[in-house]
Structures are given as structure tokens and as C-alpha cells.
Amino acid sequence: MKIGVLGTGMVGATIATKLITLGHKVMMGSRNEGGEKAVAWAQANGANASQGSFAQAARFGEILFNCTQGTASIEVLQAAGADNLKGKILIDVANPLDFSRGAPPALSVCNTDSLGEQIQRTFPEAKVVKTLNTVNCEVMVNPSLVPGDHDIFICGNDADAKARVVEILKQQFGWRSVTDLGDISAARATEQMMPIWMRLYGVLGTPHFNFRVVGASGRSSK
Amino acid sequence: MKIGVLGTGMVGATIATKLITLGHKVMMGSRNEGGEKAVAWAQANGANASQGSFAQAARFGEILFNCTQGTASIEVLQAAGADNLKGKILIDVANPLDFSRGAPPALSVCNTDSLGEQIQRTFPEAKVVKTLNTVNCEVMVNPSLVPGDHDIFICGNDADAKARVVEILKQQFGWRSVTDLGDISAARATEQMMPIWMRLYGVLGTPHFNFRVVGASGRSSK
Image 1: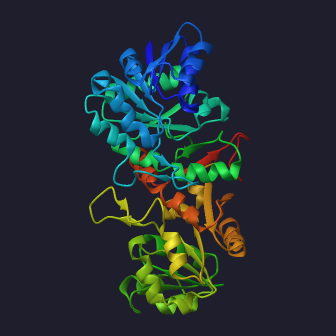
Image 2: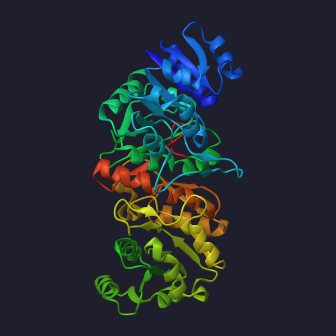
Image 3: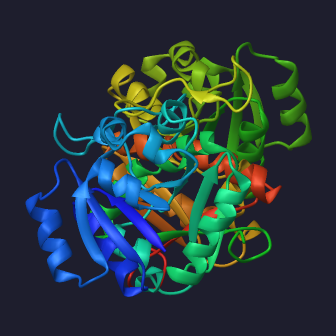
């Protein structure tokens, strides 16, 4: 499959590289075609790896990943162009973390709105599916870094798009338990897990952890 | 021990009743002495159970539980009186859920502040310990309702107070895994777990669930 990955940071590189190892053709998008990080990534990842502007990567992909910093995501997606997002599944793994006032970062949007909803509202013809934003990027593409059962959440307004993404999460990334929280407004819930995630990162000293939802049935939620 | 429980709702009644079964002397506090719910609770719970105003219950208790609705907590604690909170451990299990605009409720404070911090700021001589606010009240006092290992979080500025509360959580309420997240500002993290809690409540159809933090070590965080 042809996949566009928007963002050249750790998250973008980790997801893009995983998709290459799975046999997909991946274009990494950055602010300008020929950006240093994207070029280095493409050169290191063989014939199926390429790079371009956000718009080129968005045009290239049948499915898109938003791996940009949450506070920049809307601007990046505008640069990518609504026409290039139209009708496509846009997997939003970003969190609206505002580092401008130091650590720990606050959320730039939360409570009665979320980044996932902002993206869906701004690009109504994209099929925004929010997922993976509650774990470290290495765990995103390799859930077995955290042993045993643990959960990943998914939400979005388009049932078919979610079903497709669940398939990617399970069959390609290796997630065993994917819990559908409902429409895109559930992005409020998962984005607001960032504060507990950051506290636990401090306590545990490793980003390789996750939550298991333990219910009365005695196992994960799904 | 003499314990004051502020609040007559489900949370207050559940905690107060548990404390009675553990052999403590408990005064349930409500807006006015002789309030209907508090009187009914006291009558049903034997000689160790009593009721009074918020101020009476706060004066009575060596340790206090804030089980009021989060949006009313500051006002209730002001009625209880700063002098009656002074030097005491105040276990804050409330969440600042604002139901005024319907369901799902938003948080009335979050992100760069929290109810736990507001209480600590307003009553600097109380030893505020935030805990138990991430689970249903029945799970609070009976963690085995959710099978297997799962975690409860604790935070606060006073190390001795936290150690005392950990003891209560483990030896009296039966919690096996209590994770210290640091100072009271970590209340932002646990209070912001309400949105994911409410979504999961909808998905699972039972309030008897909890999170297990699974780390690279393969077990709960503590």
C-alpha cells in the first residue's frame, strides 16, 4: 500500500520505518521537499522509501499518518492540502502538547475539545481515526515491547475507516487488544491521558509501558 | 480511629460504611446537622456511626475524607472550616466533574490546575492526599471487585501523610499496588483520567474496572 507519513520526528520515523519493513511504499512528508531529516530517512530505508513536501506525501498516500507535533498539526495539514486528504483515512497519533512553558507540557486543547476533533472539523472530508497516541512511538509499532496484555484505543466518526485501522493495528503492528471508544470526540479522553502518561514515565523511568484495562471479566476490555 | 467523611452521596456512604466495618468511629458530615441522608446512614451503621454538619465532622475526624462533588468541594471545605482541617490528613477522592451542561460532564478545572491543588492552596495547613479518584467508589474500598493486579495512584506534598494513606489503602482497603506520582500537582493527571474512565464505562457497561500499568518489567508499577 502507498502510505504518507507526515512528520520527520521520532514518531514519524518510527512509524515510517515500520511500514517499510512491512513492505509498504512510504513517502515521508516534511515542510519542504528535500528536508534533511526526510532525505536521510529515505536514503536509509531502500527503494520503497521516498520523501517530499507535506502536500506531496499527502497526495502520494492512500492512507496517511499524522505524526506531527500536535500544536503544529492543523497548520501542517493545511500545507498538505484538504484536497489531498479528501476521502482518505488520516490516522492521527499526535497529542496537543504545549512545551512552550517548559516541562511538564500542558495540553493546548482539552476537556471540551481535542486535537482529533479540530482536525476532523477542519478537514471534514478526511476520515480521521485517532489511535496510538497513548503510547510511546516504539510501543506503537511493537506492542510486545510491553509484555502481556495491554490496550490501545481507537476512535473516529467513520466505522469503515476504523475497521481498516483496527486491521492495520492488529495484523501489521501486532496489537492484540484494540478498544473502540466511539466517535472522534473520544479523542478528548485519550489525549487527556498524556498527563498520567508523563507522570508514570517519570516514576517508571522507561517509556515502554502501557495501560491494561482490567474489567469485571478479569481480562482486557476486548 | 476517628474519621470524618464529608459528603452523603454514594461515594461518602460507601467509604463511611467500609470504615465502620473496619472498626473505626465515623462521623458523616453534610450541609446541616440532622440531614436526612446522613441520619439514615448513621442509624443503619451502629454505635460507631454518627452524623453532623461539615464542621462537626471535620472537627471530629483525626483523618478526613473529601467525598463531595468536586464542583462543590471548596465551598464544603470552607463550611467545614480551615481550623478543623489544620494539620490533618485530608484524603481527596473527588473529581471536578461539571454536569451542568449534560453528559458526558466536562472538568471544571484541568490541565494547568486541578481540584487537588485548589484544595491544597485554599487550605495550606491541611495535608491533602489525592487518591482513589480514578475508580468507582465500590472499587475504592473493595479492589478485589476487579480481579487480578491493578493500580491506584496517590499524590500529595506531605510524605508522611502519603505514607499513612498508603497504609490505609493497603492494609484496610486491600489495595496491592499503590503508585506514588509525586506532589499534589499530579492531581491534574489523575483527575484527567475521568474522560477515559467515562468512555470505558460506556464500552464495558460496568463501573467495576480499573487500569493496570504494565511496564517493561512485565508487572504493575509497584
